[in-house]
Length: 238
Image (cartoon, rainbow, N blue to C red; front, side, top):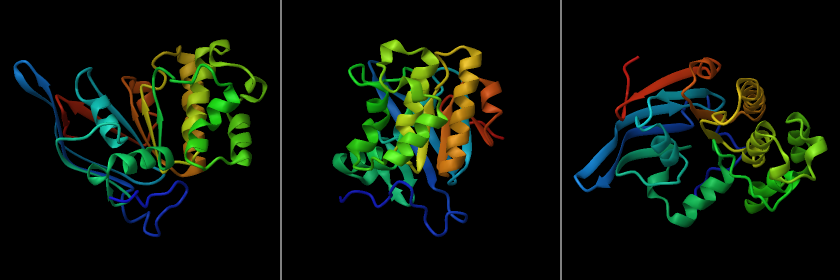
């Protein structure tokens, strides 16, 4: 199958009428010596461009698995994941890689910065891979994230909060259609976590991307527009 038609920074004309992300009857199991272990049991979920959603639940409820499936990092056993109408499950591996580079930004709890690259190089990393490096937008991100004096440093020379700000900037450098975050403040103290979350929400609003965040924190979840809770692989009734 050809590469997906979703492109960073491009919103369809009917954005207000149609969800950017639509998850339909999503199912995923993992093999164990005792047989298949169901992790996701028929998830239905939607998210519009510019909307923010916190996904909550106990450890083992399937939150990270759902995020990885939506981020095209893993394949589901059944169901659909539609991003601007493109079914991720039907894409080839090359097309999925293109989608991740161009239309999806991902922020992990562990930062995952490249140790051998400076702050400036880490910020530009995904955008350069996607052929979407924009020096004006990078300069704006650098300024908005408070990283101007740190651009020549390496990750090991940064605090945890500074590293996570670089990770957020890297994910947003391509102006993704969808930003995913898996416990993005889990390794930070409360003050640093709040600062990172505030900056992330400001930049999400500026870019107009959809934002799906996995978190255990009720306090952080309350800052997003919507909240859903996973219980044993299914969404709890609201």
